Amino acid sequence: MSRRYVHFDPRSLIAVLIAASCVAFMEKGLPCEIALLVALALLQSASGHLKMALGFVAGFAVLWLLLNYAMPYMAVTPLGALTLSLTLARKIFFCAMAAALLVAECSVHRMSAALAKLRMPRQVLIPFTVTMRYFPALKDDISHIKDAMSMRQMPLAARMEAVMVPVIVAATNTADELSRASALRGIENPTTPSDTERLHMTPLDWALIALSAAVVAAVFVAGGSY
Picture 1: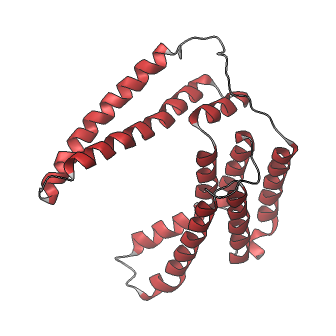
Picture 2 (picture 1 turned 180 degrees about the vertical axis):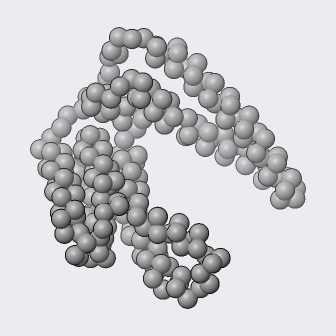
Picture 3 (picture 1 turned 45 degrees about the horizontal axis):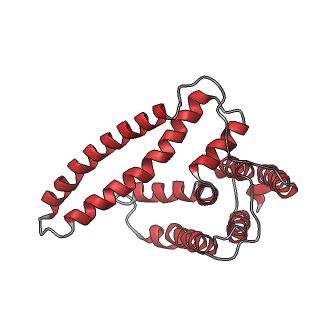
């Protein structure tokens, strides 16, 4: 991991994600997109994720080249769905950058503590927390199943069936185990639980939130001109 220069509260990173979502479907010119790309890449680099920033910059460059140079010279009908998918990917690219930074910076516990500070209803917070814990556990199960199947010489179709059935069973078992673990931890208790996570908004966090709001306003007013 590269050197970290700043450390943000999860709530300020959530504000960046909301701002990126607002900007996603606003009209923007290429200079505006490049400015947003550089700003988010600098934010990722300052947070200690230089490789992530470089990967997203390279991904945007490849995406732009495909949309502007590769697709126009190919048959339109067969690649219509692919062109639409790439266009949508370009639209939500900045959302992906902000979301990747949020996930990399915050554990599930830290993120749930931030959402609780934002007064998110428990009816939303509890399913969100369980879901965020579900996918890493499922990923580990899938990795173990793939490792077990890699040593067997099987046709592709048979291998897919042999992998998918255990994955479905593992997904069901994982969901059941997480539900029981949540019940044991008192997730159904109506009182407000205590939390060991100490979150604190610094002036840098407030500056990031203000800058995110200013960027949304600037893109809304003049993004299509640049």
